[in-house]
Length: 504
Image (cartoon, rainbow, N blue to C red; front, side, top):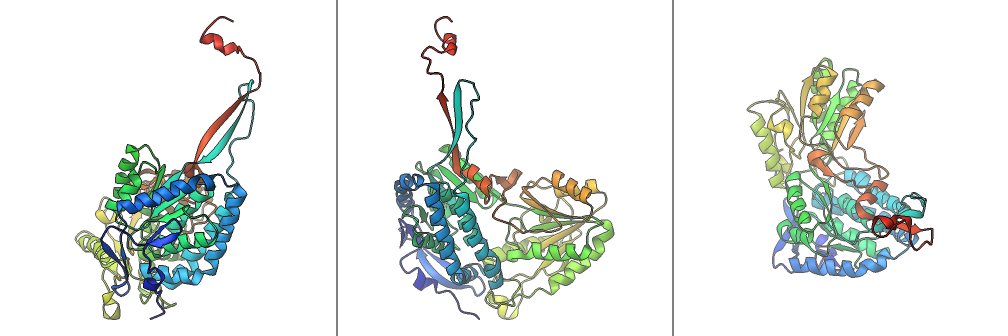
């Protein structure tokens, strides 16, 4: 076993970060962060109460005028310093992320942490480009221009699958635009969100701009979303919980941003590179142990390639190395918890009644038995309307179905309620271009699946939610647009006044 992050020492003062300092929660309820690779508790802390949420929102509200009034250059400089602090602490962040999530250290080191540093650097530059429409005389008698202004206090809720990156995706565009924020991370995985907020303070971002409350969804989360001083809510999580967040946000007429579930299709046309498609399917279905809302979950393979694709994917899945997340050779870590492992196993076990489990479909024994591990699983012969095809499993499970013509492949790809991400595999530019137009998803990759970049938006269609994370498009979520109009005539009695009173 590698060296473990010492969470108890690091967060001895508590798991709430309010006004630039750690403090304990006041709910009277204790929660444990559990290492999913061992089942051992690694940090016990007091959950946040509604009173803790109130305190965090109050300091965020008080910090808002000063931060909103800073120049774009000042906010940009602070974010550049922030990126530097994160880069300097990269190893510590990776260790904490692997501990609380069970991520292989090579994933947290090469994906989660550098992606977060890059995202911070991107928003440091983007902070200087909060631009509206240029000035112009659109009525003839007036000069108009558009201002982009911060909204106020943002109350955001992040999930447990990518706690560091999700904290960044919520916090960075919000504060780059001049807002302040209260983030509630998942109570399973608060460590790197707290570290992220501490790094913001170390970089010189004023106290109260970034706050973390770690509590249960029904207590802290719902209170945050419904808080009258919270002007906007951004939520990433399941579609079912997203519906509840939307109800609460609507009651107080908040700005709302939702990034919800997914069931990403992986469409392989018969002219695709079969080896590239097989490798891509394994990587895209197993990333983060399949706990990724953009992970490839449904592979539709045109019939001439179908059998060979299934055989090759099974062969590659069987070569994947499960093990200690801190071993650099480990490919696949555990799921986030034993409860999540059992949920995934339930989907697979039920599928045995109507489909074929080609490989996997079980938890490993031996030294890994105490962790929340589950073997890479490949399923075939499932019907399009079956549970494993339609429902989000959120585990290392890939279902493969055949199709015949292109029309059928695209129709099947669109045949779930979701629309977050998809990919199409073809060496025909016209075929690929058609797929990008007709597959209903917020992101469509061609001949790849999963890569994300800070400069491009991430968000879904339909039951996968609305709004965008990352990129300059995220400012559309975190700013409000104001039209300013100047009269240029200096005429007291304007011609249009006669439509209200008097004659020309």
